[in-house]
Structures are given as structure tokens and as C-alpha cells.
Image 1 (cartoon, rainbow, N blue to C red):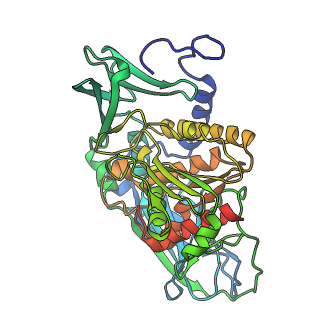
Image 2 (cartoon, one colour; image 1 turned 30 degrees about the vertical axis):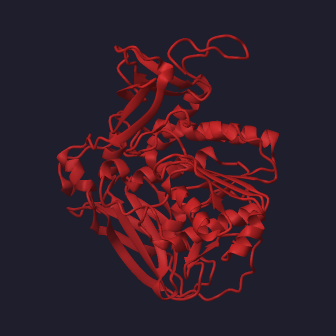
Image 3 (tube, rainbow, N blue to C red; image 1 turned 180 degrees about the vertical axis):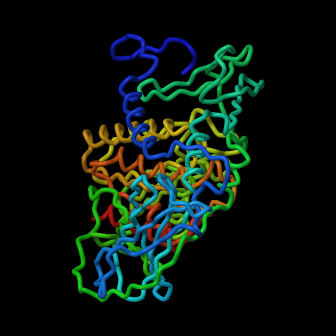
Length: 497
């Protein structure tokens, strides 16, 4: 929408500049997260958490364990001088694993905000089990990352292209621009989403056709703060003491939507995912996948990690025919059909913010809530979505707003079509090898906590990439196909249960 007063089509009255209810919800959720982040300063690395000095031990160890038992590992944080930490906020990652079985599972971490942490593990399998606890970032780095992220919008630059006939001009765009210049506003007033471009002379705001963006790689951190973040993760301790015996537990019901987002949500063994509390079906052949997908329309909205799902279907469904949508680059819309089985597959990027160096169409740009609103839905419709990694470079309220609007769109969808299946994928862990400030997994850790709050109680299915990549210990934002196969199996299980 171009600059100027926008009217509510129903009432004819001007839209409010900001949606007060969305603003209130954003503030409430932001405060819930902000209270968990330490507000601290430091002057020397010696005052920060040391993995080497910190201590790990098993609380109330037993002589005998059975499969399904719980164990609690305690971490007491110390600084480099050997002084006990008196506040929490360290970003830890924990898992249990058995290399001989190719098995692994995540641990749920409780922060007591006094330098002590409890990590809760479920012993899912029989055999010798090791425990690893990694200090990904000390609490001092966490405080710096949180402050840096919420400083402003300068981490990504935007360039917009305006065209009129055979003429074209490029101008600066973004979510927040200097209002001293004449701006074109592209707004979704209902969802309180705004994007702006500097208005070029002799061009209408309606002639905005394409845009691109890039990481500016600016830093809001001091040299000392940066030194805490770069390649920081280190193991606090490894304990190898457990040998649980099989307790012959029964197989649970097939996984279905509405079971909620749980952590840990299962375990991996020999490259197969075993969800906690339910059973995942396997669809390893084209025939099995086609039988499940027959007669269904799949809409996938997300980033490159959900693009891997589309690539998996394109590679493994030999009967799928891909349509030429006359767009360039991997971030183009992907559309595949199987006319014989009436299967329809589409993948689309989740809209701004979406970091992509090439120009993409502005007119094709729709957020996930708007995409969902355009789908009628029925028992033959499956919507899968993920969102997160591209938001790490923006203030967290931007992510909270988008998730709140996605929830509202899903609720509207279920009112008109309660039989539509909705599947939500969480973010993957990454190798955290570069661009630490903007792309650290700490930001995804925050996103996961926000997702738990916002999507609680929805009748959706979750593919818990955050938990699964931790259990697998992949440390890749784009895991290998063996991992993707398990995500697809979870998707298919929800679809056909």
C-alpha cells in the first residue's frame, strides 16, 4: 500500500497507526524473555564463566537405572578465577549419547539464576550412556548479544527497485527509515507490519516491483564482548556412568496433531527418530509416500531448511512434475504436481525479513499469515511452516509480532476448516562458526522459548528441529538427507494419522 491514510474497508474509518492489542502482547512476551536475560557488565574475561572451572555432577545417583528413568545433572558455574557465579544466564547445550548405538537425546535445562543449573534427561535406551554439557556462551556474552540484537535495524540493508515503462530506479528501503525523506509505506495494518522505501522522484509508490537485501556485518559489541563470542563453545564435563536396563515399555499411539511442543521430544538411534510419547511411522519408499499424499494439497512456507523438505520431495517422488514459475534462484516459488494421484506441493519463502542477495518480487511478497488467510482449507489440505533464522538479525519484537500473527491466522483457519492439518517446524542448531553476533544459536534458543509461549494450546503438529538437531549433534543449519527423511516422516505421520 502506498503512503497515505488507509481505511478499514468494513467501517470506512482510518486504521489506527498501531494495533494496541498486538503491541500489548509483544511487550508482555518480550518482558517474559527479558527477565531471563542477565543484565550485567564486566571489565575482564576473568569475571566470566569458565567451562574448565565449572563443575558438573549427578544429583542423587542410583546403583541401577531402567529405561524411562529420569536423571538430573547439576552444573555449578565458576569464573576464570575460580569464584562461584552468583547469577545465571549462561547459554548451555546438553545431550546424552551412546556412540555404539548412534543414539542421542537432549536435556531440558533449568536455570536457578544463582549460578546453578539442573539438566533433566530421560534414559530412552538401554546400554552405556555418556553425558555432555557445552557452554555455548557465558552469561556475560548472552547479555551482550541480547543488548546488541535489540539495538536497532542496522544489521540488514535493503534496496528497492521502482519501474515505470522502460525506466527503473533503485532506492533505500527498510523496516525503519528516516521520516525526513518522503517515504512509500507498504503496510499490513491488521497485523501491524510496516515496510518503507524512499520515494523516488517521478515514480509512483505503486511502481515498487523488486527488492534485495544483504547483511551489513556491523557490530554493536565491544572488542572484549566479541572475544567472548567467537568460537566460544567448550565442553564443561563428560560423565560416563549410566547403564540402564530395558523395562519393556509398550509402544505408544501414532503421533498426531495437538500433542504440544515438548523438550526433549524424543531420541535418535541409528539415524531414526523416536518421538517421546507417540510413534512415528516411516515412509521410506516412493510408493508409501504417494499412498499417504494421494489427494492432498501441501503448502510449505519457510526458509531454506523447509526448502530442504521440498527438495526431498522433488528428489524422491519420481512421479512429481515440477512447474516452471519463471523465477530465478533457489528462493523462487517451487510448485510440483502429480496429476494421476492429485498431489499438489508448493514451497514459498516466508517473506521479509528474508536474507537474499538477488532481487525478488515485491508483488509476490506475502507473510505467512496472509498466505494462510488465502487458503480455504479442508481435510485434504496440509500447511507446513517454519520461521526464525532470518529474524536473528532483527530486534526480537519483530519475530514475536510475526508469530502472534501466524497464530491468529491459524485460529481463523481452524474456524472455517478445523480438519486442515498445520505442522510447525522449529529451527535447527548450526555450527556457529562465523557471524557470531547476528547468527548465534542463542537467538534461536530465544525463538524456541517464544514459540513455546505463542503456540501453546493450538491443535498443530510440531517437527522439533531444535531438539532433533541437538540430539543428532549435527551442528549444521542444513542437516544431511538422513535427518531430513526423519522430518518428512514426522510430517507424513501427522498428515496420515
